[in-house]
Image (tube, rainbow, N blue to C red):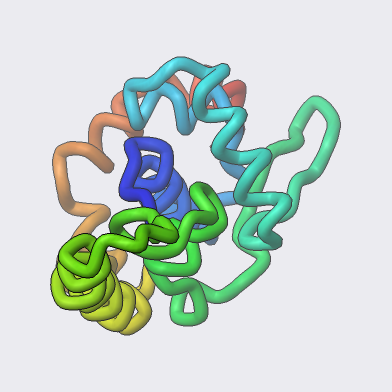
Length: 159
């Protein structure tokens, strides 16, 4: 498995979708603003998440994205694999060298297996609960900053 920024931001996008779920659709523009990333980069993440069936999209003027799977059913490992489908921490190479095979088996394979088990046990809902739940998150400055925007602009952002 490859732990990339794309995978990390995909997890953040899904957390955002869960937090704002009761407030309508999330647009690329609003996600870009909240995550402070380019809209083009966020759009590629949305496309990959949609291909993996984590989110659905609604087209049109008031369109956007929303979760298609409950946050409890989305594991961090599955998101990583959807974004970067390479299993294992180090690629296995057919190497006749006994020492290389030993190191791969005893270090990289075992470490990857442990990480996979851990990430398969953590869901988007778990991460939200760890921060005190959606209500606690809504009291944070990050969430409040969104509501300091003029209501008309907020509507244009799709939330």
